[in-house]
Image 1 (cartoon, rainbow, N blue to C red):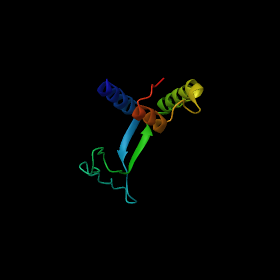
Image 2 (tube, helix red, strand yellow):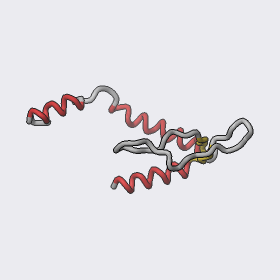
Image 3 (cartoon, helix red, strand yellow):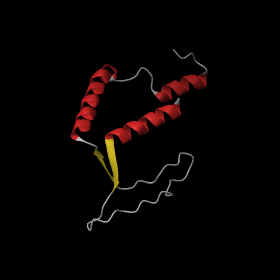
Amino acid sequence: MAEQGTHITIARLLWGFNFNKERDANGKESDIDIFDYTNGLNWRPQPFDCIIKPRSERIAAAIQREGEQALRELEKYNGKTKYRMFEFMDKVARGEKIE
């Protein structure tokens, strides 16, 4: 399931945006070291400069419209949650029932 979600996310990003290397003052593309990763268990690429732009005005408008709609629909979930993670973990550690 997570793999499918990742594929859908990548497909949507490629549908909506052009990804290009950053250029220096002379117009030369910057180099990106594809092997430059962080250390540790949660390794990921080191930050790098790039240019991300919508593929067209029509796509930019669709992204804006869908984002605004999502924010309206998610508005009802704003505010504090019933549980805070540290409170939840304390209950688990004490063996208390989680509602």
